[in-house]
Length: 92
Image (tube, rainbow, N blue to C red):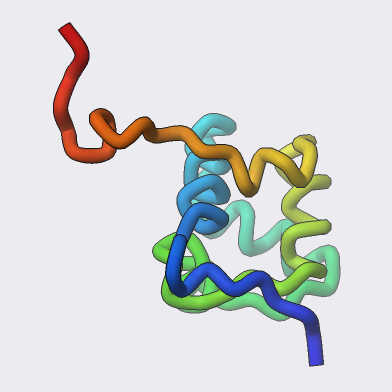
């Protein structure tokens, strides 16, 4: 059984996977195809659930995503929102 990162209480990893994908202007299907070529068994449904925090990514998936996005593991755990920004409030 593959080791998984638990994000049920804090879907930070999934949000950052989506952020990295969008920063590179990649569609989810493109990332999924690349993951599958690296031997990661993932479907569009599973990947969507990972990005939304409803499913936990495997360690193998995270390793493959660092190669696809050309990033460091720290990017998956980066805090991107301040409490004010998360609520939609803007600074003056």
